[in-house]
Image (cartoon, rainbow, N blue to C red; front, side, top):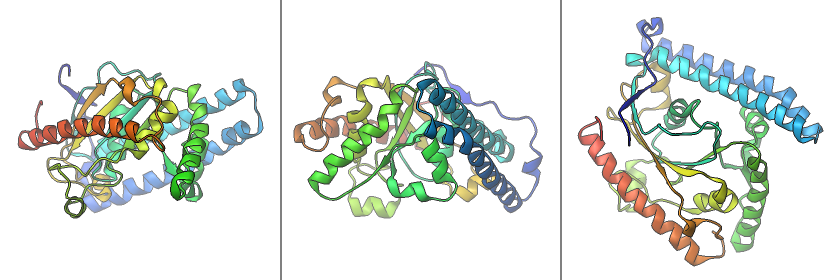
Length: 311
C-alpha cells in the first residue's frame, strides 16, 4: 500500500489544548456552528445564480465558488481538530498515494460514529473532490445545512415503497447524478447503512466480528447511475484504538488516536451497468463482491486492534 504516512503533520503549539476539555468543546462547537451558518449564507448568491441562469459557463463558475466555500468549511474544521487534539491529530493514515483531486471516485467505509464524516473529510481534503452523500429528499428541509446540500448538488433520493417505486427512485437518482458528469465528484456510501453498535450487531447476527452486514442497495444505485465514470472504489477502514468516540469527544479533543487504511480497488465490469432493482443476478454479483471486501476489512480491523501500527 506504499510507504507509511502520518497525515497531516501536527501543529507545534495548541493553546486550546491547555483549556479544560468542556471549554474546548463549547468553543469548537460554537466555531462549527458559526462557520456552517456563515459559509452556507455565502452560498446563497452563487446557488441562486446557478438556478436562474442556464448557460454551462455560468453554472460551472457558480459550482467552483460553491465548492470553494465547502472547502473553506472543511479547512476550518480541520484547523480546530488539529488545535484541540492530542499530538495535533497526527493520525495514522496509510494508502493516500496516487489519488486524483480532479477524479471521480466511489468511497466505501465502515461506520461507527458521526466523527467518521469529519475524519474522512480531513484525510481526503485536497486529495479527491469534495465528498457527497446520497440523502433522503426530506433532509433538504433541514435548517441551514439543507440549503448547503442542495447548493452543492448532493443527490436527494425520494424513497417510496414497492417495486415500482424503487424503479422510479433509481430514475430520479440517475437524473440527479447527470450533473456529476461535468464536475469531478466523490460519492461516499456507508455500506452498513447505519452506525455499528454491539446491539445492532447482535440483532443482525452479523457473520463479521467488527462490522454489520453490508447493504448493497445504495452501492447499486451509485454504480447504476455513475459506475462507468468512477475511476476506482476507495475502500476505507476506520479504527479508533481507544474506543469509538462521540462527536462531543472530537469537539473536546478527546480522540487520542485514529487509524485509517485506504485502498483503491478497481470496479469489475460485472458490477457495472446493472439494474439493482429488477435484476436478481446483478444484485447477487454485487453482494458477492461487497461481502468479499467485508471479509478482508473485518480481518484488517482485527489486526489493527491487536497492533495499531503499520498493517
